[in-house]
Length: 295
Image 1: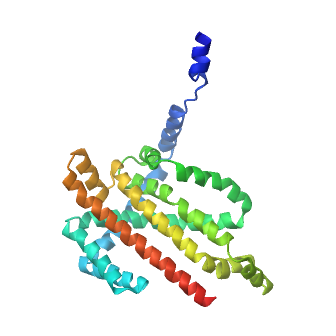
Image 2 (image 1 turned 90 degrees about the vertical axis):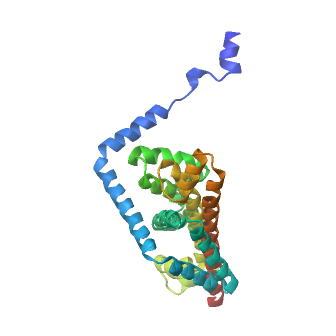
Image 3 (image 1 turned 180 degrees about the horizontal axis):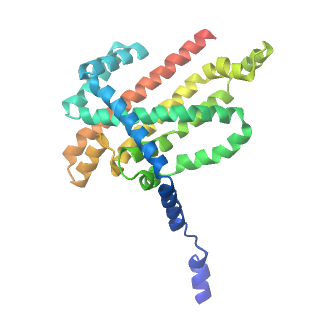
């Protein structure tokens, strides 16, 4: 009976693996032995985010609203779309959350730029090297299915709380779409176009730069769109580790059980996400239309 109870009815405790303390010790040891490098990364991250935040703060609110409205009109070719974007962005100011919106936006912009800088070359590499693709794909699958909360823990262990671990966690969480869709777009470029480029004497690099990337640009832009959306979602979650902005307002309201206080920041985050999503989608459609005309 003891045998059945120990080995059959319940999973044996002696067979269970406990990696928690081992991983924690390894991360702490890495943090101790690489303090100078981590301090340099922290300084670079804070400098980049503060730089973008300073630029956004220097722009008068009315100029930013007009710029977003004009960009919406230019990309969509619909005047009422631009007007709606300007009105939605103005609502954030009417809610008294303009400074918090700029903080959130600066973190999103920095993380997305970092995702593009790191993710685009990785996507190109995956498209050009089948062996690397077979190795990296399972890693990307794991990263995409991992709960977003998991990325916060190692980032805090390495950089403590604040804006630096928020950026690191956001970048790791949001980088997968740009890698996947860049690779996907380059791989599925029309084979006849590639054969024609090679027939005219183009090298592999020339074909990549002049044929594959331009033809794959709508797919790449879709990857950037998805990266932006995931970055916005993760920035809100990062309020748990000290990232200021709209997410922090929601976190404070949640801790105090103040539904009214949480409503306006929540709506403001939705507005920012909608504007960023629609602008990038319109850019994708515009780029795709231009590509068809060129063909």
